[in-house]
Image 1 (cartoon, protein in one colour):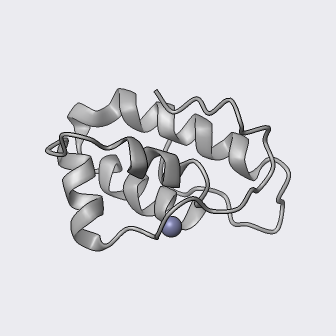
Image 2: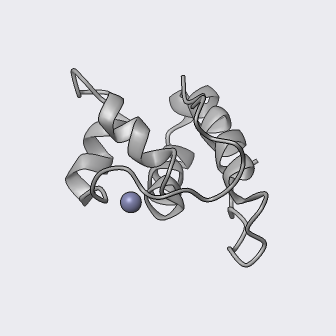
Amino acid sequence: MLNNPNYKGIMINKIGKCLSDIQVAEFVDGCLSDNSSIIEHLNTCADCFEQVTDVMNFIEEYADECTELNDSYNNMITEDSDRPQMKGIN
Ligand SMILES: [Zn+2]
């Protein structure tokens, strides 16, 4: 669900604004009727990405989604070795 055809494994300009804590919680809870703009932002912002995956990491039922996010995150940072690796998610 997070495959972005414009994303080629390099850091690109962020799309949209960074997420608030409430937005992160709502996204993880799955209570947003339209999260496409958030996903679009997450595909371009490692900071928000890590926030979301950190939260998901504590929610077992989101294990599959978390794996998907983590894979996408790893792709995101492939060309940016200065960024810290995701911690605590396997
Ligand atoms: Zn952000």
